[in-house]
Length: 301
Ligand SMILES: C[S@@+](CC[C@H](N)C(=O)[O-])C[C@H]1O[C@@H](n2cnc3c(N)ncnc32)[C@H](O)[C@@H]1O
Image (cartoon, rainbow, N blue to C red):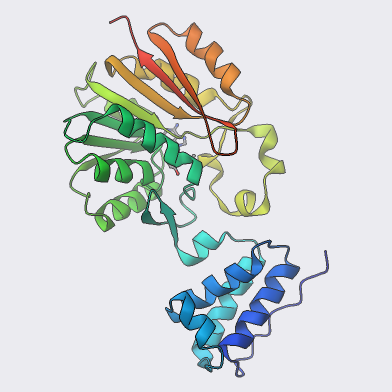
């Protein structure tokens, strides 16, 4: 790949069309596959414009502050910062979530977790649902919106993540319905008197192998929080601990629904078989045909 030419920082003058062309060229040279689309999104964001205005208004002159702002964001993207951190938002389950580098950017495949929680809990049920490793709060907030009578509790080790999660809950009018607890996996539940009473525990824990970290794309490796991604040498360390801790809280027939990485299903089955108190219920594949969600049920109480 060619070295990417620095973005001219002089204010100068440029039309919207020229900025789009310049942005697309720089993003393409930086190896960004969706360069044209991202150029539109960045300019729309800076100018607070809907898409068709960007296309129609190509001759509009940008003010020097707009030009500077657009070039600043393009430069960040050329440096491989994820577009979601630059724009500060990511859609998940039809809702927009605030994101910043303190939280993992929600991924579309994680919507499967929400779907399978919703399948088990009817709309009018006063269930208790715990989202472990909540990050941006995307799972907890989506569930709280879909299941208005459920009590939702969300945990995370990271205090900055919980700040963003709270912000997202307020944004979607479920701030009063979710209890946020800081700590390691289910440890913060110890004082909540929930033994045997939780209907569903759902989690997208870190599951990247330490040895895979260096192979991840730059956007992930350089910008997303390592602690949200890497589990340990096996990748299934957090799932195993969660399975062990969850037996105390799940009600009879209650479910633990966890996201896993591609190729981890076999190891997960082995782990489930070794921990008393569970029945392996289901393995779900994502749209790409990869193993993505494991569902186990609490038995033997
Ligand atoms: C893969 S991200 C998932 C975030 C969000 N639930 C999602 O699906 O987009 C994992 C999250 O787990 C948190 N985390 C990592 N280790 C943890 C632990 N031992 N206990 C609780 N949370 C943990 C990280 O801070 C991060 O927010």
